[in-house]
Image (cartoon, rainbow, N blue to C red; front, side):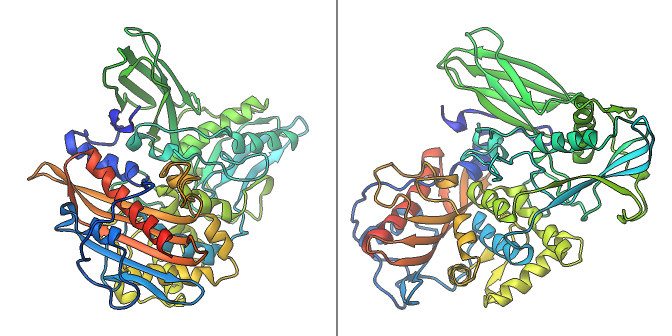
Length: 548
């Protein structure tokens, strides 16, 4: 099954059509680069010869001089981590659109500010008196603390689970592999603890306090999420579609199930050679409609629906978790979170903390963000950094990130960052800054945490299936991919405005390198050409490995 065979339209989005659709699809697909086992040693010179370091391998200059890059812009910098020697460089001081390699910067700043060992704590308070029969004559209040997983990805060994095809990209990639942990496991733990604390019924309300930081829709972004301190299952409902026999209804299931949402499905199983098309829309308040077709013989397909109000969603799920534990709740499951009933401030010193959910260490959050390029979590790092420094906003987080980048010794005149994920049109950086950031991070006491959070080429995350199992470079590169693309309406084509790969490498001769490779502004006509741009960056990466 090819990921791009599926068209999905979420409830907030406009229709995807032709190459405009493929442009958005690219944001997920092309980040999975392919590194061929071998490549032709094409002759030719690079468009901008290095000022110092070794001449580029002929195979690399051959790629750069391919006609597909006639109007593109290349940037390359490779340095030895141990000696500081510049090995290759092309346009190292020019600014490039970085795509998701921006997450290298956001993640590094967050690691510095928040700390690898930091754990998010989500408490539930009782406002009112618990009588002898176990009835709380008052309200239960869950105070969101910015926990990006709220226990819903935690494995038995205390790690945060992810898959190489994460559900956060299901609608752009066309499919996903769901994690094993129950997305409601954190809320279930809280509900069990409430019951164990002797509360058997609640006469008042169940409320989510979501005032930990200022909620915001990220600016200058194609995202459709709101940054909020309460996150359950990434504030998504996962919808799984399984084909049956041609002409019959497909099987549709979803998680997490809640009375707050009803799923109405009308998906037919088509013949095996027909294209699959799935459409997910809002059918009114609390109603999700999924329609279309899926070919017989395919495996299950996962798509997602983003909830309209994360706080109300979390409240409904918490009430249901409490009821499963035998706690009787007077409040209705469906309905908006009654935030007007919250205390004037987040001072809960005069209330009893009934239970507490503690997250895995932040190092696990960082791994999830960088391994699968989790966009919402990356943007959320900015307000989380702000809170750690006594501030509240997304913009405060960017100011704090600037302070970190100054400490790292980067040239702030040659970079521009306006979000956490790397999708703002104002994001630009030089290969020099990226390599200098990588060098700085390799010198820190928490360098191993940063390194371990990066995808490993041919092993996991966005680089898991990028090479064949026999490739000599498998396991030798830990790096972040990056891609942005735009639709060229005049020519009905796609412009790959950024394709990037940056990180660390151990070469065939055992040298430890930091590298950054960017190519900007590549016109492509179809999905195969899109993939070839990624293949070419992979070839550059393998050439560096072989030649050093």
